[in-house]
Image 1 (cartoon, rainbow, N blue to C red):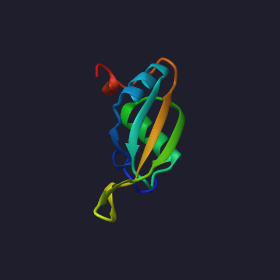
Image 2: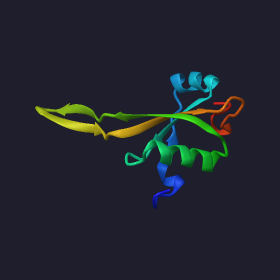
Image 3: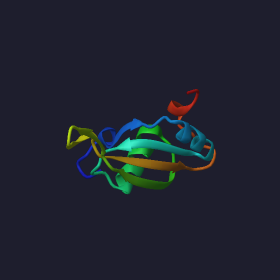
Image 4: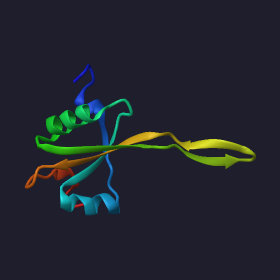
Length: 98
């Protein structure tokens, strides 16, 4: 895995209305380490959840800014999001029943 643990690659699942709708198409969304690439994300999800990954899409989410007087301040840091598509018939139980 290139010296990084699978549990360090996947930070947390993203549970929103949009990601819950995507679970019907076997697509699951995670916040991942910013240095992780698609191969590391695929290996981490397959290792942790014991599923077969068909496709991985990643997005670099920009930081959100606010204002404090005249200054622009960073309210939330930049992060990386991954949408993982599983093989048909498989699912990740952590997303079920939410």
